[in-house]
Amino acid sequence: MKLAYWMYAGPAHIGTLRVASSFKNVHAIMHAPLGDDYFNVMRSMLERERDFTPVTASIVDRHVLARGSQEKVVENIQRKDKEESPDLILLTPTCTSSILQEDLQNFVNRASNESSSDVLLADVNHYRVNELQAADRTLEQIVRFYIEKAKKDESLTTIKTEKPSANIIGMFTLGFHNQHDCKELKRLLSDLGITVNEIIPEGGFVTQLKNLPKAWFNIVPYREVGLMTASYLEKEHNMPYTSITPMGIVDTSSFIREIYSICHKVFEDLTNSATLDVEVRDKMKDLKILNKKDLESFIDQQTTFVSQAAWFSRSIDCQNLTGKKTVVFGDATHAACMTKILVREMGINVVCAGTYCKHDADWFREQVSGFCDQVLITDDHSQIGDIISQIEPAAIFGTQMERHV
Image (tube, rainbow, N blue to C red; front, side, top):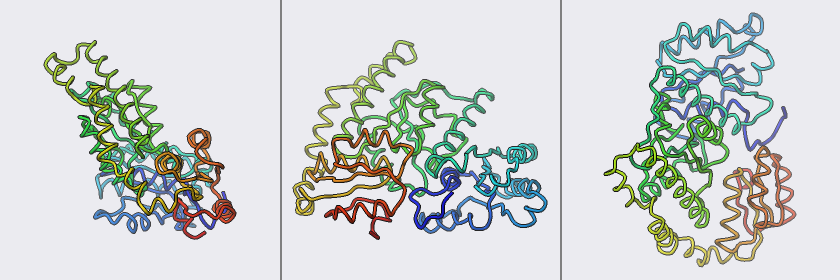
């Protein structure tokens, strides 16, 4: 625990609340003191959505400290169950509730006996993980809970869709340009003849999670949130996934080629198991994603005529930076992709590439090695500020904090 002027990734309960508030008809109850309930204001201010943020704070006050909080938490869960009738109520512990060492799982068990909603305790260690790790863990926990519930009810759908389809995992509230990325990703998949089965958690319903295994494969656009869920689905339901982020011409081409190899393998498996009708199978052979020749011509056409990267790299804006020093800093996914785009596609010299995702340091180093002179892994804003002052770059590709350097 530390006192900080600036944090790149917030505390664990913020990640859990971001996942919970991304789903439709899910309510989160946060067991926290008054200072920790800023998430509602933050999300309402930044997202500007029509609906209220579905988060209630069960305040830890002097009465709770004197008598314990069991009655209060259980009452809050039951009250929200009656008022909102959500599909799921997620109880979120915080650092304070961890210090009090209360048995929140016992509260959840008690409340679920008298609630028509599902009640779940977010299983996150608030002193070991940050916002992004907690979001990843919470999403996997919710998916696991509903898939296992569907197995018991015998309502789990495991028969694959007739046409190639994908789940997009990891689009959620307060994410960096998540909505724009999702729109572009859907457009790309549509061009390739792939339908989108489910997008989670943003705008999804927990009652639809049982449909996840219907898709041919999963897409994890951002490493920070979604990898645990994709790994679980691969292990339990033999669903392949791609975690290549389609940013930049080179990575988008790699992304498309990996999707081709995944779809080709799934198509062969379905054909061998006689799951597909002969008519359907013959029609599907004409799809772009299952035809290597069509796919390569699609990539060439997009690269040469549709993408504006070649035009931009010759523009005056970009030429002003050619050969100049730049610094890149952000989450692991965006910082790694941005570094590769600047160096490979625009001829810009990246002196230092860094990330605040210390838990993903090895992957980040592997991705940017050979593209930059120096790699920085830190969540201390003053350290990145000092390096920027030393390098004196012509441009900084960073977070909100780097604007103040």
